[in-house]
Image (cartoon, rainbow, N blue to C red; front, top):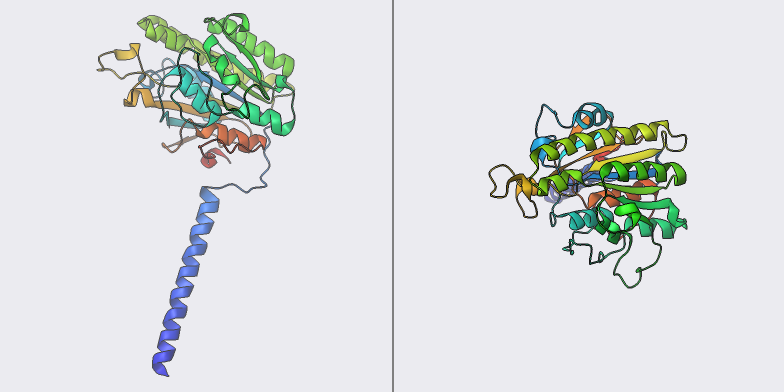
Amino acid sequence: MELYSFIYRSRYLAFSVLAALTLLFFSFSVGHDQLPTDRKYVAENVIVLIIDGPRMSETFGDTSYIYIPNLARVLAPQGTLLKNFRNNGPTYTNAGHTAITTGVYQRINNAGLELPKNPSMFQYLLKEKNLPKDQAWIIASKGKLNILGNTKSRTWKNKYLPSVYCGINGSGLGYTSDDKNFADAIRILGEYHPKLTLINLLEVDVNGHANMWDGYLKALKNTDQKALELWNFIQNDSIYKGKTALFITNDHGRHLKGHKDGFVSHGDNCEGCRSIYMIALGPDFKTNVSLPNKYEQIDISKTIAEILHFEYPVSQGKVMTDIFK
Protein backbone atom coordinates (compact mmCIF):
# COMPACT_ATOMS: atom_id res chain seq x y z
CA MET A 1 0.00 0.00 0.00
CA GLU A 2 2.80 2.41 0.91
CA LEU A 3 4.61 1.62 -2.35
CA TYR A 4 1.41 2.20 -4.32
CA SER A 5 0.82 5.50 -2.52
CA PHE A 6 4.38 6.60 -3.24
CA ILE A 7 4.06 5.77 -6.93
CA TYR A 8 0.71 7.56 -7.12
CA ARG A 9 2.05 10.68 -5.42
CA SER A 10 5.13 10.67 -7.68
CA ARG A 11 3.02 10.40 -10.81
CA TYR A 12 0.68 13.14 -9.59
CA LEU A 13 3.62 15.41 -8.79
CA ALA A 14 5.19 14.78 -12.22
CA PHE A 15 1.87 15.48 -13.95
CA SER A 16 1.40 18.69 -11.97
CA VAL A 17 4.89 19.92 -12.83
CA LEU A 18 4.37 19.09 -16.51
CA ALA A 19 1.02 20.87 -16.55
CA ALA A 20 2.50 23.95 -14.88
CA LEU A 21 5.41 24.07 -17.32
CA THR A 22 3.02 23.68 -20.27
CA LEU A 23 0.84 26.52 -18.99
CA LEU A 24 3.89 28.72 -18.40
CA PHE A 25 5.22 28.04 -21.90
CA PHE A 26 1.84 28.74 -23.47
CA SER A 27 1.46 31.98 -21.55
CA PHE A 28 4.94 33.09 -22.54
CA SER A 29 4.30 32.26 -26.18
CA VAL A 30 1.04 34.18 -26.32
CA GLY A 31 2.55 37.15 -24.53
CA HIS A 32 5.71 37.41 -26.60
CA ASP A 33 5.29 35.72 -29.98
CA GLN A 34 1.59 36.02 -30.71
CA LEU A 35 -1.06 38.69 -30.71
CA PRO A 36 -4.71 38.13 -29.83
CA THR A 37 -6.59 37.06 -32.93
CA ASP A 38 -9.26 39.70 -32.33
CA ARG A 39 -6.84 42.55 -31.64
CA LYS A 40 -7.95 45.89 -33.07
CA TYR A 41 -5.52 48.46 -34.42
CA VAL A 42 -5.80 52.22 -34.58
CA ALA A 43 -3.98 52.37 -37.93
CA GLU A 44 -6.24 52.05 -40.95
CA ASN A 45 -3.57 52.81 -43.55
CA VAL A 46 0.02 51.70 -44.16
CA ILE A 47 2.82 53.38 -46.11
CA VAL A 48 6.17 51.68 -46.78
CA LEU A 49 9.08 53.98 -47.68
CA ILE A 50 12.05 52.13 -49.17
CA ILE A 51 15.32 54.03 -49.33
CA ASP A 52 17.27 52.09 -51.95
CA GLY A 53 20.71 50.76 -51.11
CA PRO A 54 22.34 52.67 -48.24
CA ARG A 55 25.22 51.08 -46.35
CA MET A 56 24.81 50.76 -42.58
CA SER A 57 28.23 52.32 -41.98
CA GLU A 58 26.77 55.62 -43.22
CA THR A 59 23.37 55.24 -41.52
CA PHE A 60 22.75 53.66 -38.11
CA GLY A 61 26.22 52.12 -38.01
CA ASP A 62 27.65 55.62 -37.58
CA THR A 63 26.61 56.92 -34.16
CA SER A 64 27.18 60.53 -35.21
CA TYR A 65 24.18 60.13 -37.56
CA ILE A 66 25.68 62.90 -39.66
CA TYR A 67 23.95 61.76 -42.85
CA ILE A 68 20.61 60.70 -41.30
CA PRO A 69 19.88 63.24 -38.53
CA ASN A 70 16.12 63.14 -39.05
CA LEU A 71 15.83 59.36 -39.20
CA ALA A 72 17.99 58.88 -36.11
CA ARG A 73 17.13 61.84 -33.89
CA VAL A 74 13.59 62.82 -34.91
CA LEU A 75 11.79 59.80 -36.35
CA ALA A 76 13.29 56.77 -34.60
CA PRO A 77 12.51 58.14 -31.10
CA GLN A 78 8.85 58.42 -32.15
CA GLY A 79 8.66 54.73 -33.03
CA THR A 80 10.48 51.42 -32.94
CA LEU A 81 13.92 51.06 -34.51
CA LEU A 82 15.42 47.81 -35.74
CA LYS A 83 18.97 48.81 -36.60
CA ASN A 84 19.99 45.29 -37.59
CA PHE A 85 17.03 44.38 -39.75
CA ARG A 86 17.92 41.79 -42.39
CA ASN A 87 17.70 40.97 -46.05
CA ASN A 88 18.19 37.21 -45.87
CA GLY A 89 17.55 36.66 -49.57
CA PRO A 90 19.13 37.96 -52.79
CA THR A 91 20.56 41.41 -52.07
CA TYR A 92 19.64 43.39 -55.15
CA THR A 93 16.80 45.81 -55.94
CA ASN A 94 14.00 43.79 -57.52
CA ALA A 95 14.61 40.83 -55.24
CA GLY A 96 14.62 42.97 -52.10
CA HIS A 97 11.42 44.76 -53.09
CA THR A 98 9.79 41.45 -54.02
CA ALA A 99 10.64 40.03 -50.60
CA ILE A 100 8.98 43.03 -48.96
CA THR A 101 5.82 42.93 -51.08
CA THR A 102 5.28 39.16 -51.26
CA GLY A 103 6.83 37.88 -48.05
CA VAL A 104 8.92 35.38 -50.02
CA TYR A 105 12.61 35.52 -50.96
CA GLN A 106 13.03 34.95 -54.69
CA ARG A 107 15.80 35.19 -57.26
CA ILE A 108 14.25 37.44 -59.88
CA ASN A 109 15.52 39.25 -62.96
CA ASN A 110 16.85 42.63 -61.81
CA ALA A 111 16.06 44.49 -65.04
CA GLY A 112 12.30 44.34 -64.59
CA LEU A 113 11.84 41.49 -67.09
CA GLU A 114 10.27 39.01 -64.68
CA LEU A 115 7.19 39.11 -62.47
CA PRO A 116 7.24 37.84 -58.87
CA LYS A 117 6.23 34.19 -58.47
CA ASN A 118 3.75 35.01 -55.73
CA PRO A 119 0.87 37.49 -55.48
CA SER A 120 1.57 40.63 -53.51
CA MET A 121 0.09 42.01 -50.34
CA PHE A 122 -1.59 44.65 -52.54
CA GLN A 123 -3.53 42.00 -54.46
CA TYR A 124 -4.63 40.15 -51.34
CA LEU A 125 -5.80 43.40 -49.72
CA LEU A 126 -7.77 44.56 -52.75
CA LYS A 127 -9.44 41.18 -53.17
CA GLU A 128 -10.39 40.54 -49.55
CA LYS A 129 -11.59 44.07 -48.83
CA ASN A 130 -13.19 44.48 -52.28
CA LEU A 131 -11.38 47.79 -52.79
CA PRO A 132 -10.80 49.73 -56.02
CA LYS A 133 -7.25 49.74 -57.38
CA ASP A 134 -6.66 53.35 -56.33
CA GLN A 135 -6.57 52.15 -52.72
CA ALA A 136 -3.21 50.44 -53.26
CA TRP A 137 -0.24 52.15 -54.94
CA ILE A 138 3.34 51.38 -55.92
CA ILE A 139 5.23 54.64 -56.55
CA ALA A 140 8.88 54.18 -57.50
CA SER A 141 11.73 56.25 -58.86
CA LYS A 142 12.89 53.10 -60.69
CA GLY A 143 10.63 52.17 -63.60
CA LYS A 144 11.58 48.49 -63.41
CA LEU A 145 9.74 48.17 -60.10
CA ASN A 146 6.42 48.22 -61.93
CA ILE A 147 6.73 44.40 -61.83
CA LEU A 148 5.69 44.56 -58.16
CA GLY A 149 2.10 45.21 -59.23
CA ASN A 150 1.54 41.78 -60.77
CA THR A 151 2.56 38.13 -60.48
CA LYS A 152 3.22 35.10 -62.67
CA SER A 153 0.96 32.99 -60.42
CA ARG A 154 -1.74 31.54 -62.71
CA THR A 155 -4.57 32.12 -60.27
CA TRP A 156 -3.60 35.73 -59.55
CA LYS A 157 -1.97 37.10 -62.71
CA ASN A 158 -3.68 40.27 -63.99
CA LYS A 159 -6.20 40.16 -61.12
CA TYR A 160 -6.73 42.61 -58.26
CA LEU A 161 -3.92 44.82 -59.53
CA PRO A 162 -2.84 47.91 -57.59
CA SER A 163 -2.18 51.27 -59.18
CA VAL A 164 1.41 51.57 -60.36
CA TYR A 165 3.38 54.78 -60.95
CA CYS A 166 7.03 53.93 -61.60
CA GLY A 167 9.83 55.58 -63.54
CA ILE A 168 9.55 58.55 -65.88
CA ASN A 169 6.09 60.10 -65.39
CA GLY A 170 4.83 56.76 -64.10
CA SER A 171 5.50 55.07 -67.44
CA GLY A 172 7.34 52.06 -66.04
CA LEU A 173 10.40 53.11 -68.03
CA GLY A 174 13.75 54.52 -66.94
CA TYR A 175 14.63 56.33 -63.75
CA THR A 176 13.25 59.58 -62.41
CA SER A 177 14.68 61.82 -59.72
CA ASP A 178 13.73 61.31 -56.11
CA ASP A 179 12.52 64.91 -55.94
CA LYS A 180 10.08 64.34 -58.82
CA ASN A 181 9.00 60.92 -57.60
CA PHE A 182 8.47 62.12 -54.04
CA ALA A 183 6.39 65.09 -55.22
CA ASP A 184 4.25 62.67 -57.26
CA ALA A 185 3.90 60.40 -54.23
CA ILE A 186 2.66 63.23 -52.02
CA ARG A 187 0.21 64.26 -54.75
CA ILE A 188 -1.15 60.71 -55.07
CA LEU A 189 -1.42 60.26 -51.31
CA GLY A 190 -3.28 63.54 -50.99
CA GLU A 191 -5.67 62.76 -53.85
CA TYR A 192 -6.52 59.11 -53.24
CA HIS A 193 -5.53 58.41 -49.63
CA PRO A 194 -4.79 54.76 -50.40
CA LYS A 195 -4.95 52.12 -47.68
CA LEU A 196 -1.60 50.65 -48.71
CA THR A 197 1.27 52.42 -50.48
CA LEU A 198 4.89 51.61 -51.29
CA ILE A 199 7.30 54.42 -52.19
CA ASN A 200 10.81 53.79 -53.56
CA LEU A 201 13.62 56.39 -53.61
CA LEU A 202 16.61 55.46 -55.79
CA GLU A 203 19.33 58.12 -55.64
CA VAL A 204 21.40 56.60 -52.82
CA ASP A 205 21.78 53.39 -54.81
CA VAL A 206 22.33 55.09 -58.17
CA ASN A 207 25.10 57.33 -56.85
CA GLY A 208 26.72 54.37 -55.17
CA HIS A 209 26.82 52.39 -58.40
CA ALA A 210 28.23 55.42 -60.19
CA ASN A 211 31.10 55.55 -57.66
CA MET A 212 30.08 59.10 -56.77
CA TRP A 213 30.87 59.30 -53.04
CA ASP A 214 29.78 62.92 -52.63
CA GLY A 215 26.59 62.24 -54.55
CA TYR A 216 25.95 59.16 -52.42
CA LEU A 217 26.26 61.17 -49.20
CA LYS A 218 24.12 63.97 -50.60
CA ALA A 219 21.45 61.44 -51.54
CA LEU A 220 21.53 60.00 -48.01
CA LYS A 221 20.80 63.45 -46.62
CA ASN A 222 18.10 64.08 -49.23
CA THR A 223 16.24 60.83 -48.51
CA ASP A 224 16.61 61.50 -44.79
CA GLN A 225 14.83 64.82 -45.31
CA LYS A 226 12.13 63.23 -47.43
CA ALA A 227 11.43 60.62 -44.76
CA LEU A 228 10.74 63.46 -42.32
CA GLU A 229 8.60 65.31 -44.88
CA LEU A 230 6.52 62.18 -45.46
CA TRP A 231 5.91 61.72 -41.73
CA ASN A 232 5.00 65.40 -41.38
CA PHE A 233 2.59 65.06 -44.31
CA ILE A 234 0.91 62.13 -42.57
CA GLN A 235 0.60 64.09 -39.33
CA ASN A 236 -0.96 67.07 -41.08
CA ASP A 237 -3.39 65.21 -43.32
CA SER A 238 -6.93 65.03 -41.95
CA ILE A 239 -7.46 61.44 -43.13
CA TYR A 240 -4.03 59.98 -42.36
CA LYS A 241 -3.28 61.73 -39.07
CA GLY A 242 -3.30 59.32 -36.15
CA LYS A 243 -4.51 56.45 -38.34
CA THR A 244 -1.47 55.57 -40.42
CA ALA A 245 1.51 53.25 -39.93
CA LEU A 246 4.77 54.14 -41.67
CA PHE A 247 7.56 51.62 -42.24
CA ILE A 248 10.91 53.05 -43.37
CA THR A 249 13.44 50.51 -44.57
CA ASN A 250 15.85 49.44 -47.34
CA ASP A 251 15.86 46.79 -50.05
CA HIS A 252 19.54 45.92 -49.51
CA GLY A 253 22.77 47.35 -48.17
CA ARG A 254 26.19 47.66 -49.84
CA HIS A 255 29.61 46.07 -49.57
CA LEU A 256 31.59 47.01 -46.49
CA LYS A 257 34.84 48.95 -46.52
CA GLY A 258 37.62 46.61 -47.52
CA HIS A 259 35.55 44.73 -50.09
CA LYS A 260 37.18 44.80 -53.53
CA ASP A 261 34.15 46.70 -54.95
CA GLY A 262 33.75 49.02 -51.99
CA PHE A 263 30.50 50.99 -51.70
CA VAL A 264 30.01 50.82 -55.46
CA SER A 265 28.25 47.48 -55.50
CA HIS A 266 26.11 44.96 -53.63
CA GLY A 267 24.45 41.62 -54.30
CA ASP A 268 26.31 38.92 -52.38
CA ASN A 269 26.02 37.38 -48.90
CA CYS A 270 28.36 39.80 -47.12
CA GLU A 271 27.23 41.50 -43.93
CA GLY A 272 27.21 44.88 -45.64
CA CYS A 273 24.65 43.71 -48.20
CA ARG A 274 22.43 41.89 -45.70
CA SER A 275 22.36 44.41 -42.84
CA ILE A 276 19.72 47.11 -43.22
CA TYR A 277 17.40 49.01 -40.85
CA MET A 278 13.70 49.48 -40.27
CA ILE A 279 11.73 52.13 -38.39
CA ALA A 280 8.07 51.54 -37.53
CA LEU A 281 6.05 54.68 -36.82
CA GLY A 282 2.36 54.87 -35.99
CA PRO A 283 -0.29 54.79 -33.29
CA ASP A 284 0.04 51.06 -32.57
CA PHE A 285 3.83 50.87 -32.21
CA LYS A 286 6.11 51.27 -29.23
CA THR A 287 7.99 54.57 -29.05
CA ASN A 288 11.62 55.30 -28.29
CA VAL A 289 12.48 51.60 -28.50
CA SER A 290 15.43 49.95 -30.26
CA LEU A 291 15.18 46.19 -30.75
CA PRO A 292 17.99 43.68 -31.37
CA ASN A 293 18.07 41.67 -34.56
CA LYS A 294 15.03 39.40 -34.72
CA TYR A 295 13.16 40.30 -37.88
CA GLU A 296 13.72 40.43 -41.64
CA GLN A 297 12.26 41.73 -44.89
CA ILE A 298 9.68 38.99 -45.39
CA ASP A 299 8.10 39.89 -42.03
CA ILE A 300 6.90 43.29 -43.29
CA SER A 301 4.01 42.03 -45.45
CA LYS A 302 2.80 39.65 -42.72
CA THR A 303 2.78 42.52 -40.21
CA ILE A 304 0.90 44.78 -42.62
CA ALA A 305 -1.70 42.05 -43.15
CA GLU A 306 -2.09 41.87 -39.36
CA ILE A 307 -2.64 45.63 -39.06
CA LEU A 308 -5.08 45.91 -41.98
CA HIS A 309 -6.85 42.65 -41.11
CA PHE A 310 -6.54 40.62 -44.30
CA GLU A 311 -5.33 37.08 -44.81
CA TYR A 312 -1.92 36.67 -46.41
CA PRO A 313 -1.07 32.96 -46.39
CA VAL A 314 1.54 33.17 -49.15
CA SER A 315 3.95 35.12 -46.95
CA GLN A 316 6.70 33.08 -45.33
CA GLY A 317 7.31 35.83 -42.79
CA LYS A 318 5.96 36.36 -39.29
CA VAL A 319 4.20 39.20 -37.53
CA MET A 320 6.69 41.50 -35.82
CA THR A 321 4.93 41.29 -32.48
CA ASP A 322 7.66 43.09 -30.52
CA ILE A 323 7.09 46.42 -32.27
CA PHE A 324 3.50 46.71 -31.00
CA LYS A 325 2.50 48.40 -27.77
